[in-house]
Image 1 (cartoon, rainbow, N blue to C red):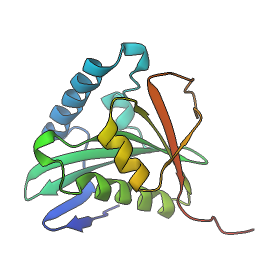
Image 2: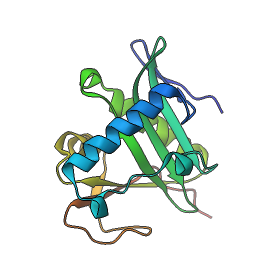
Image 3: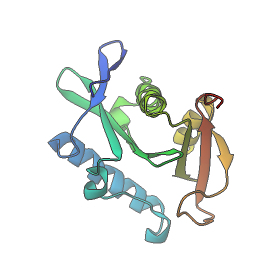
Length: 163
C-alpha cells in the first residue's frame, strides 16, 4: 500500500526496515535509549519484529535522504507506535507530527481506532509531541508492566461506527 503525507518537500512513505539508512537510525535509537534507561526499561522491537506482516514501517524522505522513521504494530483492537526517531539535525521541522499522522491514518484504514505507545520519562520532546497530538496518559497495555521509567499513552482516533 502506498501512502504519502507531505510537508514542504518531505514525503512520508512505507519503506523497508532493511533500508540501510533505516538500519542506521534503528541503531542510533538503540544507542540513545540505552544511554537513558537500563535494559529492563527499554522496549525496543528488533528488526525481525519490525519485518512482521502486522507492522507498518515508514520513513520521512526528502529527495533520497531519510529524515525520520516510525512504525505501528497492528493488534486486533489497537495499534502500538514503535521506533519513532528523528535525528537531532532534522528535528523542529514537523517530521514527527506527519509520521504520527500517517501511522494514525493507516490504523483508521485498517479499522483500528485506538493507538497506544510507551515512551520513557526522559524523552520530554517526544512526550510533548504526543500530548500536542492528543495522546493522554494511561496505564500499561498489552504485555507491558508498570515501570517508573515508562509513560504509557493512548489516543482514540475516531468514534468507531455503531453496530
